[in-house]
Amino acid sequence: MSSTDPPTAVGAAPTLTARRLDGLADRVFSSPDGSGDDGDGAIDVSAPATDERIGRVPACDADDVSAAVERARDAQTAWAEASATERARIVDRFGDLVADRREELLDVLQLETGKSRRTAVEELFDVPTGCSYVASEAPGALAEERRRGVAPGVATATVTREPVGVVGVISPWNYPLTLSMADAIPALAAGNAVVLKPDEKTPYGALLLAELLEVAGLPDGLFQVVTGEGPQVGPPLIDAVDYVAFTGSTATGRTIAERAGRNLIGCSLELGGNNPLVVLGDADVDEAARGAVQACFSNAGQLCLSAERIYVVESACDEFLDAFVRETEALTLGTGYDYDADLGSLVDADQLARVESHVEDARERGATVETGGRARTDVAPYCYEPTVLTGIEPDAAVACEETFGPVAAVTAVPDADAAVAAANDSPYGLNASVWTGDRERGAELAREIDCGTVNVNDAFLATWGAVDAPMGGFGDSGLGRRHGPEGIRRYTETRTVGVSRVGPLTFPDRIPTDWFVRGAFAATRLGRRMRRGVDEVRRRLSRR
Image 1: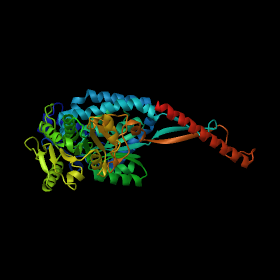
Image 2: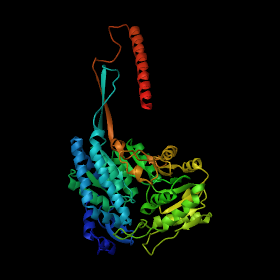
Image 3: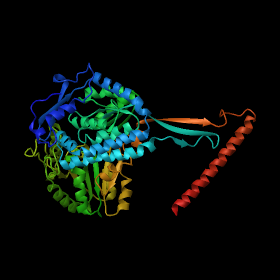
Image 4: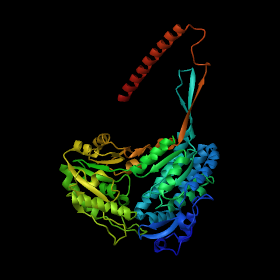
């Protein structure tokens, strides 16, 4: 893809040039008959920090997608035959390359998302961390398992895991590096090929990662990138692959799940959230306020795990609100390639309009803007001040919907039970946070909150960063889990192999059938009694 003279947005990025971005765009797969070329077959990519066009990528069509999947499928056969250890070594090398090439990756990430350098570092750091976990744990997670057979000494049962084939990954614009690789890397480690469809706003980071995977030793064709608008690229991708991993809105997730269901393929969906944060009366309010700033305003609130609804027990509410407003007003805005700014830009005009409409809706319903509440076009075209609201009506948009911007609503509640009830009063269930001076009480309360991840005295990293534990949502927040062994095994089909040591397992020829039936049930009864006895001994030992 060719571009015009280098825009100032690209020139501001220390390691990037327009030619470099054009070279990355050339990595997009397109079929000989596809529309992936200049002109009508191209998509402009803009920098949120300046609203300038920084380049073009192909607008792939159904033929491009089909050819990319076919090429990936051809490469997957040999990859599946490689040992899990060999595949893990390539994943590990890729993690090293990401760390080594961090400056260019950070520049690309900031250029196409508008986020601050601090937020970009937090995102990028997650990729080699995830690679380390997958490289270490995938061989064990994928190994054959011996299971109990039909009866001791009679037969064995062994479970094997095989890759599903080609995995389609559809990743979002808000964390384009982390959320593409968190799905793609375990899929590759499990022996699959991957076709990645990044958001059309943020294609360059995905293309740079594809380049690094190739350098790490990934076989040619195994990881393909197709770019384009979701309605044009998504349906043919879902129809062609064997599994879909999607991160994005609940509305789109429902459409993907329906299509995947018709095709009888698996899917994992991390969807929207309107996440609650609970502050109990015994919490350290200054610590809770600092944590709430991280929970609500990281990446300018464009984070699926962000807290948007804050419920504070009345006895601590005034003190917490004062501290929260103070911490919020101390945040700095900027889009420079240094570490001076806390918050960067929203991604585009549509996202800014959504944030503005939610705040205006709250105002019209009688809410108070404690701080913030306005766009900051003096900083960047789509910047918005971190905003704290009080007096929110239950049917206000910020109370019911995902704002996905730097807006938090604080509400006083009578006690902890009321806080939990308010937290659970939502169709979403992705992430939650509890702040208390009693960690054990906080952990007990966390078990009552209907979310896939719940953090005690932390915003979201205690659970997201626990890469050995599954992460995903309840209710309208999605299906399936990433991270942990579950995040690797989701990309496999299980096969159970049973081997009889005594021949056909049926009624024996030399024993009267009524004798055999009585004996079989007597043995079963004895076995059940023995199992109960063993279980009771284990329970007693565990209490000591």
